[in-house]
Image (cartoon, rainbow, N blue to C red; front, side):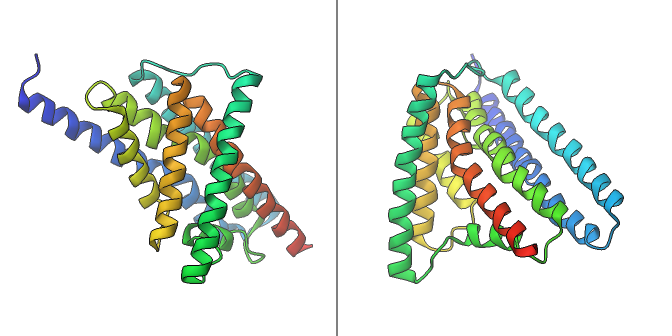
Length: 237
């Protein structure tokens, strides 16, 4: 039986791991903004080389997160059939409704047409950005965020704490952290991200398959990322 000191140390270690993983999850986006400044003045072969190096680092981080999750999780990944995908898509439609209502309220109350997080992302798709930055950001948002954020805010916390505290507590705490990590500048935007976090957590726990919430997150981010990519391409042509 664990002593009180051992339990406390376990929680401390898990929290330190989550903090470290959070910073690691930010590396692809941070590198995309940094390399973009050099790529603007570089030749095409150098830009391609920069993009390849970024992609290698990005892939290594994804693999590390997945292996880390598989090491500590008792659930792992399950297959997603067509019926499962339909259910996830219905969750996504609910999320669209929440986002839509929240955005309207935010515009009425604060005069903001988008969240601060979205505004920051859109600047990284501006016509003044290099193609390397924009492509790296597209991959980060459409693929990286659904995998890394679902493991960081849903899968790994459940693997760490699922046997030690009620699942609803994990859902609320991780959703609060998820919202806090998305640059909420007013209570409505904070509630939007919190609600989306809870909805993704519910999607995950419905079948206890982290792949389901990753698919939800892909629906959420993928379309937005490719729309911003299209606007960028239209702007530079």
